[in-house]
Amino acid sequence: MEQKEALFNYLLRLADNAAILGHKLSEWCGHGPELEEDIAIINTALDLLGHARSLYTYAGEVEGKGRTEDDLAFLRIEREYKNALITELPNGHYGDTIARQYLFDQFNYLLFTELEKSSDETIAAIAAKAIKEIRYHLRRSIEWTLRLGDGTEESHNRIQESFDNIWAYTGDLFVEDVSDEEIIAAGIGPDLKALQPIWREKVKATLAEATLTIPEDGWMHSGSKEGRHTEHMGHILSELQYMQRAYPGCEW
Amino acid sequence: MNEQELWDLLDEVMDPEIPVLSLVDLGVVRKAEFVAGNPEITITPTYSGCPAMKVMEEDIEAVLQGVGFDEYTIKTVLSPAWTTDWITEKGRKALQEYGIAPPEQATSDKNALLGHPKEVTCPNCKSRKTKMLSQFGSTPCKSLYQCNDCKEPFDYFKCI
Image (cartoon, rainbow over the protein chains, first blue to last red):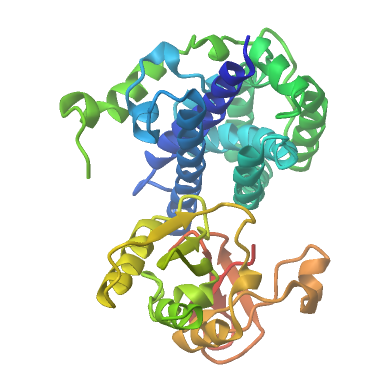
């Protein structure tokens, strides 16, 4: 595989993670459990959208076929999206959203800390910008994990169940394929396999502080890197892409 | 027009969300120079997803056109990443007077160094007895605080 193709794939994965999770979080707009939290979660969605925009724009340049950020965000079919499966899971109740967010934020934080050192200057610049925001995301999702885990019996039980349910989607974050090998060899991105134990230790510590139990590693879903998604993805795209499908080429 | 006058002109362009703070004071304008006789302005976003970037660009275009420039370039760069340290002294004062607590200098804040919440001064009554209500405020660059003395809630320009 050529490095250019690997880089394009890699950028799409990063951008799709941010775009799809940002879209899911934006569904909470006006429905947050309290006003401050409604604002906080939409701020997080906005940051992720910002990361997605920079990454899609760069992906389009790398590909060299004249595709813009909007073309990549809105005009691909399901199999061409490479976001991690965890990002497309339903919002559920607030514990589900927080568990999904914490597990992802912890991963994203470790990943972008490494990407700041990327041999690719544009990725390093995007990461240096994004990491400042991801730090806030992580701090907030840890606070909520503690509040719900170490809260009432009801909140404790419900968020424990959220972590148990989502756990089988976390393995997918660390799967590596030929594009990753190319990226690691070129010093563009980190070895995900090396991040996994660090991630696990951090998650274990946070859950312990929240009086929660880290779920056992069992069978894990995978396939996002080949574009194999959960049953939720099609529904997300039907909403996300509605305007561009109904009015092709429309602009604000 | 020389480069200093170009900077002065840009200093008249206000942040769309905080209309007392110019884009120069905010540290968003990184470079202002003439290339082959035409202005070339380099800006950087405060936050990746800042929805005000597009408006800032249009506002810069408007002042440039206002003084008769038809050809100009506005470039956006991400690196080095924007930091609150780039807000000028004049900008910090303008924020304070407008009722937004400017970012605290990390070095003067012992609490923050020890990992505790930052001590933020109330822009209304200057009390140091304030508490954070939320990490996230009305725009991506602000947190929401409340003063324990005068009870007034206020925005704090968060330090990044």
